[in-house]
Image (cartoon, rainbow, N blue to C red; front, side, top):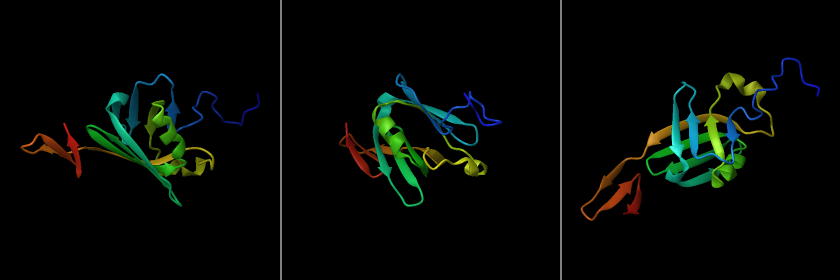
Amino acid sequence: MITKPGHNQNRPSHPCWNKDYQAQALRVELADGSLYVFPYRRLAFVRFESGKDQDTLHVVLDTHQIHITGKHLREVAVALQKSTVDWVRELPGRYGSQVDDDHVWITSIAVSERQGTNDSSGTEVCSGMVVNR
């Protein structure tokens, strides 16, 4: 096999995410070194939005929301549908020169807790959504 000088064969081919068909949880790594692990059973839904300059993924769990921006995120959305995304991570802008036009590139990830309140009827209101329990 011929490799480029300085190319590490052990380096993942997808530096922003990894697929694993036996994944039971989604690990979300932030640029500051912190991380979250969310079991797939907590996943409520995923919304993918294609944009001219960047794509957006909204991952909604029962306790948190994850907002991911980058390029070619449709592939990650389809893998989330199959619960096969092992981890995702954002990479600092200084790595932008390594962007390959055909590969997923995650530029930012924001994780926030979903705020919920209960009214007297037992209905929980979360971020403008009403969930009957």
